[in-house]
Length: 470
Image 1 (cartoon, rainbow, N blue to C red):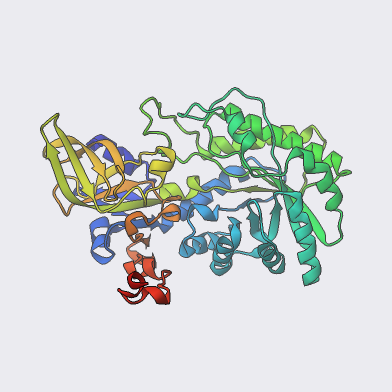
Image 2: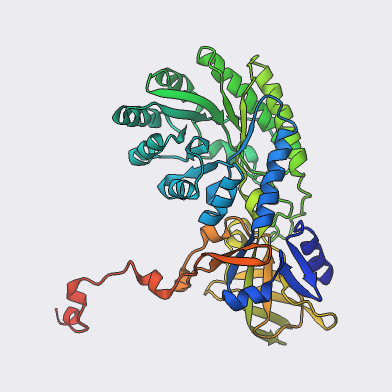
């Protein structure tokens, strides 16, 4: 990355990052000071940036949704660190989540149960019963879940609050940005959502007195930044909701959830693809305009009364991604002259901790924590320490650096910590939350003992010679 790219990364951080005499700060804390307290590799999240970001997302939709309240349900999967979910609960957010583990995070973070959606496929009875007991909404993904909700409600002696996940189909020739896969094929075969064939049966089942059906939701996913495609799916979602209303005898949704899939301001998606032309993602304000305008047109086709209807949005990457960095230490500089000149910067982190790199062919901006005023620069390959090829930056223009110097991978606050894995038994990093001049450890680093804690030896293997003798 060139110096200008470094400046661009800092400028695009919305005040989260800045330079003082070449030294990188996150909020008011020098990054090198953080690493002295909490050894690298390290995830760092800005609390102020997270609060600014969620307020901006909410305001963008409030400006264009004129029927009722706007509720933000951040995707817990994007960053399930308890402290971050607590910050968002303080901001009045709900939570979109999958499974018993994420549900427990939301509960411990203090998210109001009525603002939680239990989403996901193949829900088990115990998790549905826990949700009903708490007053959490169950987002129905299959008709089987309706009967499980009825059983849970009967067992608990209370009504279950449900909403239905729909699968709108929009005819388009558009393809997924940078990978060229038809969006219709991806969306049409994606497992989540109630199939159109089952809508009538669901309507009959939802008349059970044990159930209250409050709304509908969809999630398109981050397949494109083309607003014409995003708008088309939003309009079709509105039309399908109107069809469901008619199919179910005039039922009217009180909540409509448009899901997430918003591209963050700096989206690393697909940049490892040499043919990829980096898109200019639309602002969240423009995205909200297109979604709400087209959703409204679709809903109007059925003449639905939307007065008081709550609009819900589920940002994940767009919310958390811009608010975090990942800090790594340069362990070694390796060079060759034959068969061609090449330089590797070997770090103490890995693509196992930066999962968007292998999973989404992403290339987050990598910048030095200390930026020399002058000095040589070179094209290098930044790599991780696992046994994989572990390419973190295929070609980066960086200053001449020495072992012990620090690198920051920018805009890595979403999905990387959540998806981090332990190949080679590499312990996962800590997470630190920065608030002004203060830094707080909010998730400790793993240890080797943590990684081996689940392993046991049966009796016949406890003595080194016993098993061999038998």
